[in-house]
Length: 548
Ligand code: GLA
Image (tube, rainbow, N blue to C red):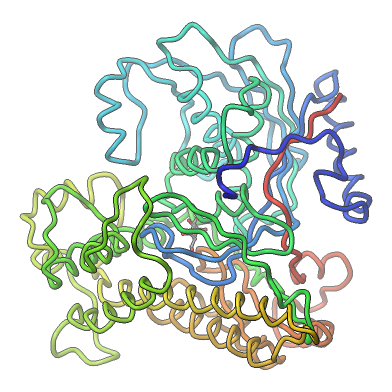
């Protein structure tokens, strides 16, 4: 299984990038980072850790409630050149960035007697017994590039250098460069955290001790330290992806990643996924309390309110996400870490069944266009908990701000989007089978089906989950006008990129149409244009290049 494989360590760039052609195009970037490292630190790096960004084809804002999504890694990536430093103090870090916008930073982990902040309940128990813990002083109020380097370091410190042991991390020099545009919905943050985690593992000689799945879990926990309660899609895509495939990633009862060959890239008529950056920069750590983290709270509170309607008993202090409430309602045995009885077909039926129940969450007597959200008081009342317990369980660990909590709309999006992911996966599998037939032709109806699912997904993002913005909606509209089979916002949203399914022989005309009609693309050409619109080539997941 993909998640159980070891983290790849290569000694040649061709192996890292999969083929000679890509290696020769990319080689200069890798050489530049090695040369610059040598200039800055006086010796060659020992390793380069690579972690790609990702594009999510379908299934947004459902990973943190533990439903499956379908991303693929992109070629754009983050590179961390790194090596042990000759500095005296144990574990100290000199982190430089090739981009002059990001000033060099030096920091050293300190042992503090106060416990480190931790996002999950399970960790509460650990806190109590940890008299001392590592502290790297991440500033969650301000967006700082080195926070992602520090976030990667935390997991390595906590897992491999417990304060009680005598082993201490080695000092390290790091030089970072990246081609994943920040705030573009292509997950530069997860790529930063994964590459950072890999660097600290490599230099401390711990790479062999983790599987890819364990690295994903560590990177997820690490990224939450930057202040966003994100799910695991980005980290899993960055670590586990394989060339020519998307990954169907499920999170419950355990992390599972199934490579889905993308037949659209291989058969006739061929089609490709094209990313287009709206150029509205949207970093999920910025404004998290009214956007990303608010969606997390709305869907968690929604799970409790739905459970009440479905007569699924919950303990007052537990906080199960929607996927778990659904499983319990359907009566399947599902214990974390154990295989589930709920396979994809049963899950699909269950989602259809529960969608009929979701209407019960719609506030009575309110028409479309009227306020469908609940005030804090209404939400607490609907949850069946007393005010104190509700705050403790749902609000004490996260900062959110809203006058109305859109329980009905968010829960509806989650179940409908999860169903679309299952249908998208099934269509890809059917198309892959068709490709095995003697003529190998992919019926165009499959492309239309995939496209329709992408369109309804965007509609839901725009109106029900409300994580789009006018510019992204406009870009999607223009993409459809330009002949895309389907088009949607990808990733966290509120800006960033769209992903569109486009017939390969129409890609040039598609790009021309976008440039002519999307105002922010006016005058863009050559390299500048290629940076904002590009056909994605599903790339391989994260790895480490060991230099001699
Ligand atoms: C961000 C998060 C992911 C996921 C997406 C939306 O990228 O990091 O975990 O929730 O948003 O699908």
